[in-house]
Length: 306
Image 1 (cartoon, helix red, strand yellow):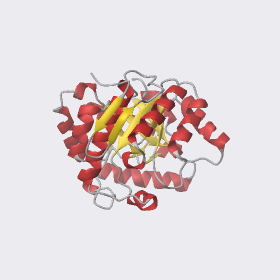
Image 2 (image 1 turned 135 degrees about the horizontal axis):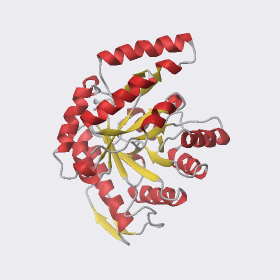
Image 3 (image 1 turned 90 degrees about the vertical axis):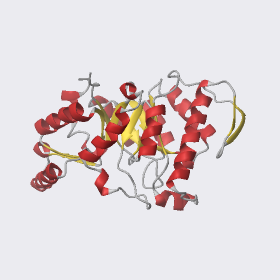
Image 4 (image 1 turned 180 degrees about the vertical axis):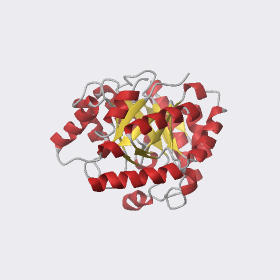
């Protein structure tokens, strides 16, 4: 049986505190399930503070990270920040964690950009530690990358046993970790050595191959499959002739290169495509660019919860 559709708005910046609250309230009013934020050293709001503010401005909208870069924070402190967000949101946090890919972030932070295996090893160990901190009263840990002595994380998670974990990644190693440890698997393109996407991994065929790998996992029925849509547009709701033409051109391109990471078309065709993709691949959790929040609201209204 297919999972019901859920939709997230991916947002990261605002002109003011009130504008940020307006964005969160708009996402909730338009029927989006979640407000997701990236975690980069760019022109964006810092996610922990911004997610707390979004939660305070809403009542049902879930909040989440897509995704916290494990290398930017100590896992004990990140576990505590997460349970604080879970408490302040009334149990609405989705905890996304990744191994890191943005080389510019690492350079600005003065952090070494280690080989993929090292970064993934570190993230896997951190996630194990974070889960222990959420579910055990006192934790001592002696690992390859982290050493912790009698650590206690309070407050305890509001969601039990802990907030749902989202792991984002495109490589088989990350997918294997997600299949064992996550509740939500964010299917992302694989990245090259400089942190950019490998173009061959954005196609539906490539995504289908990765999902086939996930299907072999014992926990697959418990996994919710997510994609972050990088660019999107609704051709029959464009505000100008130029915008309509651009959206139609992109719609033609995405028809040729079938991909879940770009969505352009009419409302009817987008609804049809999402339903067909869920039937074929099982993808039911769709995160859309915040700039397209209003345009996609009818699509969300037609499919959410169904």
